[in-house]
Amino acid sequence: MVQGQKVFEALQWASSFLVEHQRDANAGEILLRHYLQMSRSQLFANQQLVLPEQVQKDFYKAVRMHAGGVPIQHIMGYEEFYGREFIVNQDVLIPRPETEELIVEAITRTKRMFPDQKDLKMVDIGTGSGIIAITMKLECPYLFTSAIDISGSALEIAKKNAARYKADISFIQGDLLIPIIKAKEKVDIILSNPPYIPNRDIEVLSDVVKDHEPHQALFGGFDGLDYYRRLMEQIPEVIREKALIGFEIGMGQGEQVAEILRKSFPQSVIEIVNDINGKDRMVFCEI
Image 1: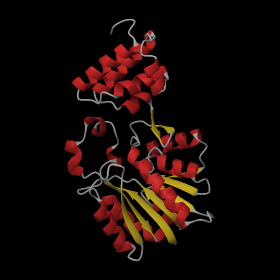
Image 2: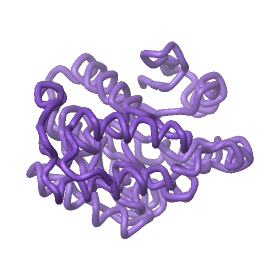
Image 3: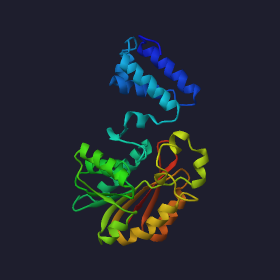
């Protein structure tokens, strides 16, 4: 570590070091912004700034940790999602940009299907860090929102995130929709980003993912569709006559998930929606 290093020099070192270790060179910029508490424009306006000694130590340590496989979100303790920072750790999935697209689509369809906005109940299944439930509640305050996860550790993170944004959400520990079925409740909207990676794909996943994110939230059985099949056994017991179901899916799973939905709701309108990269990423069912 060079004493008195300037911002641009630290970024050059981090970029080279990370590329050398097969990591994204941009991670250095994100980490340095975190430690300097600067926006991207501020960072580039201060290229000649000499790094404070402690910032430099923390930055070098963080870059080496990421080179070793630790996600930068775990190093920083948060990830940005839908313009807000959410606490994350090894107990929850790190939010992905694709899930923001699920939210955008869900909000649009909710407003179109339920224009009176009265007494609407929504449940987020497998909530993890709570990003779907919390964002939906903040963007559509009229929703009575519940969030379910089988992991107590994940729910603790989700509760902290909800408290941070004063989002009034009922958090429930349980296996998929079983708590709702037992309570004999009915809901209008079901959203979920369930585990959908086929078990065999563990070999091709980055070590950043497979060694640091919860496998329970990643893998969905032999073909990745186990949770969709289980949900289709449960959803008919809790869904109202007019309702919206929205799933995030893995690339290439659109037709299969749509067919699973068709078998349970043959009279519904089912649509596979591509993400910004043109990949099938969501399936919506309007009943």
